[in-house]
Amino acid sequence: MSRALQPDEELVELDAEAVRTWCARAFDALGREREEIDAINVYPVADGDTGTNLYLTAEAAHRAVEAVFAASGPDTAETVRAMAHGALLGARGNSGTILSQLLRGMATVLADGCDGDHLARALAEAARAARQAVARPVEGTILTVASAAAGACAAGGPLVRVARDAYEGAATALTATSGQLDVLERAGVVDAGGRGLVAVLGALLETVTGRAPDHAAPAPLPPAAPREKCAGEDGPAYEVIYLLEADDAAVALLRSRLDALGESLVVVGGDGLWNVHVHVDDAGAAVEAGVEAGRPHRIRITHFASDATPAPGRGTARGAGSGVGAGDRRGTDGAHTHRYGTGDGHAHACGTESDGHAHACGTGGDAARGERVPRAVVAVVPGEGLAGLCAEAGATTVRTRPGEPPAEDELVEAVRRAHAREVVLLPNDTDLRETAAAAAERVRAEGVRVALIPTRAAVQGIAALAVHEPDRRFDEDVVTMTAAAGATRYAELAVAEHRSFTSAGVCQAGDVLGLIEGDVAVIGKDLTETARTVLDRMLSAGGELVTLVVADDTPPGLAADLEQHVRRGYLAVDTTTYHAGAEAPPLLIGVE
Image 1 (spheres, rainbow, N blue to C red):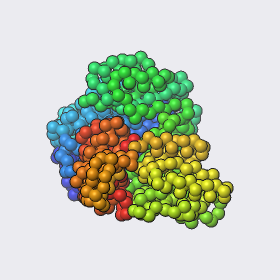
Image 2: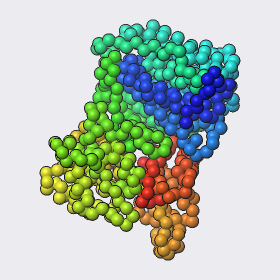
Image 3: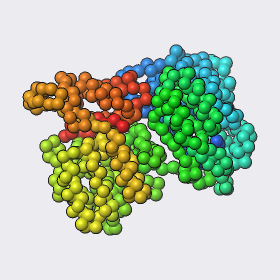
């Protein structure tokens, strides 16, 4: 995936593969620097999450770029647009939202050419677009650093010179930010968002030269002292973020209304799709304004007082919940649990908590030795791929094969193997509900607290597992997991074994059946075409995230084709793909 230059080789243009490499390196760089950037985050809110927000925004951009490469051989224009669009969909926080607009501004120019002169114009357009997106621009922030980068390379020239001038101009401006804002000067730090942008431009310079920048961006850390007052203390209490489908005129009115309601207003995007970020005291009014402007979705509301982190300089990073792949899952309280993974559906670093409770979910190993763990999840899944994915996320798994559902004794044994005081059981099959209920009763008699969530499909189980938090109170955890599962509509593609009458008409042996919520809704001849039809029917009722679970014996390129179909027809919908492996249905679909 990463483009390696030969010694003394330098790029003269940013082709599609170079943009892909830049995106991956920016994601990696923000991952490495996330904790340090979080630690110096004191403006506009001292909530210690700027590094995390930038990292998650870059992750969304990286995921989008990898998706277009998986689907086809994209040109440079398609690649930069995918990078910008992915960042727009996944933008987090104030700085992440601004970064997404910077990338969008660059994409409008780089789509026409990718030499040094185009890069210089792209950075100028990025700085202009970002300032325009912010209701009340402030100097000493990421906006200042972006403008300095654009100004330093305004003369244009060869690609390498432009990239180096932009990076050095940004790094110099970053150092000066500590004297431009009183809150930064008092804390002894540079601007956190600007620090992230320097990391992104450093990744660009490394991509075109093959060498990392000579000097790292400055990162002075403040002493461990009482943190600055932040929103929720002498400012707005809530951060509200949502995607919005609306026309330009409605968004212009929305800006005025939200600007009067709160502060730190950033509205980015265009062409009918926007990302809205604002700090307010009345979160409901901010959402209502979005409803009046168009169709808001992926609404995230954070209460700053309950989301506080230790003082900057302590090096504290935020953890995430049980990860099950790429994307984002929301609980019923409006908080969000991030899932880390790759476009090919293989999860990474899943199921661990910041306090090291990787074992608390039960991994399916020999847990019977020693004291019981606090809580475990037991999930019934088809296919070895899904079993591995759920095990990585901390669940004890029970494999099911076609025509061979697990017996009650197998479920009882799995709960015992998890060796936990509290267990959440996910049957993931309507036909297993009674069997799972009987198994739960047997284990309860042994003193184990068991909650059975009536998940009817594997994709509902994935949704539930994604929001599982072992440190949350048991009842709250079960409610949140149940809500996530219930919000996931499911479908399955199967091949008819013989002629039969169905709710969609008569099928012949070999026909492809599209079952939605357990009923045959589509009969087709081709797996890919039938899957597209099923997806369209499901998304006609709305949706934010499509989950595809693909078996080994499906046609090559099926997942990539469906991902591309969703991207083209449904701008605001993310797609995540998992590989179920052998002995699984050809395709499972979930829509949240």
